[in-house]
Amino acid sequence: MNAETIEVVRHRPMGFTEFVIVIATIMSLNPLAMDMMLPALPDIGSAFHIDLPNRLQMVLSAFLIGFGVGQFAIGPLSDSFGRRPVMLAGMVLYAVASVLAISAHSFELLLLARALEGLGTAATRVIATSIVRDCYAGRRMASVVSLAMMVFIAVPVVAPSFGQAVMTLTNWRGIFVVLTVYGIATLLWSAARLPETLPVSERKPFSAPAILDAFSKTLTNRQTLGYALAAAGISGAIFGYVLCAQQIFTGVYGLGRHFPLAFAAIAAAIAIAGFLNSRLVVRLGMRVISHSALVLCLLVAIAMFIASRTHLLPLSVFMALSALMMFSFGLMFANFTALALEPQRSNAGTASSLYGSITTLLGIGAGATVGQAYDGTVGPFATGFLACIFASLVIVFITEKGRLFHPHQSTVK
Image (cartoon, rainbow, N blue to C red):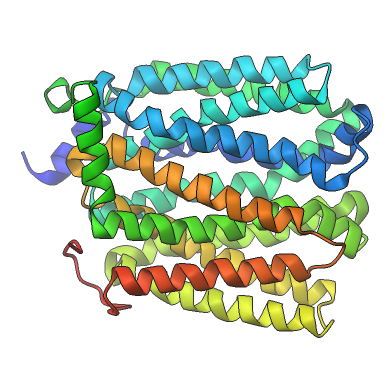
């Protein structure tokens, strides 16, 4: 049985197209729950009498914290008990948490529901990535992830506008009704069609020594840890942007309720980059594309920092630079993920879990710092963006021992 046959067998009865779509749909539970909330933040503040605009960022931060913390346990559980039961349990928790948010009578209870939602999507995000790693490897994996990311990234493009549309018909609680319905529909589709991709013969015992050994193998691999830390820097820039977006577009540029249109136009650049990456990565390789995108992103960050300091950052320039930022993110993230997990075929669940935790928790730490520093200008975001991207470039340089853009296939030791 050749490698291509093994890839197909692992996700039967699904064909390749359905497999990519269902993986993207599962992964989209996370950004949908994040970005549909953006236009609802002012109304949530009014409902719970929140006077400090920066405090409303906790609606997003609580979700991300639950998402980051939950990933520590998801990988070992799925490596021991299989992908399906853990993933389906996460989807159930997601739906239940969304119902809790609908009925929340206090801001604190809403934050608890958001944290539980994040915990539920920890299972879906980690296991979706693990399932792809079970079935594919190397550049082929990067191509599959890029195709899935096209749908995954399309969600942030439309989610704020969709959230705004929902609020014209009802109120912010209606957004959680939509999240509940989407979660249940995804649960039913996955339960009916997505097979178990981790054979019993490849599962690991769920014991402290086995888990610690898996953690050790993940954290001591130079390539895995290096690209996880680099991706954390990218995540910090993304989270900083998302946390500040509503305030920047409405407070600095005065777009009011039209800001989802600007947000969508910028986010569309990631989907375009994902499509290009899926077509180019098999031929050019993950390193050539992602390293080039990282250098481009640094140049964009420098330009935005200088423009913000010299007060030469009108809306048109900010949107152009932000679109380039998102385009470079789209060329980096799938490739960084594939590079980090490439050495972890026998340890995919735990590796995906730790990778997700590192990128999310370090990213939200950096992003929340940027968000809380918002002072009515673009300056704090531009500074944080530059710091995160510069740190990522340094980490990749160290990980690759100075050999950037080198299209080698071997694993860095």
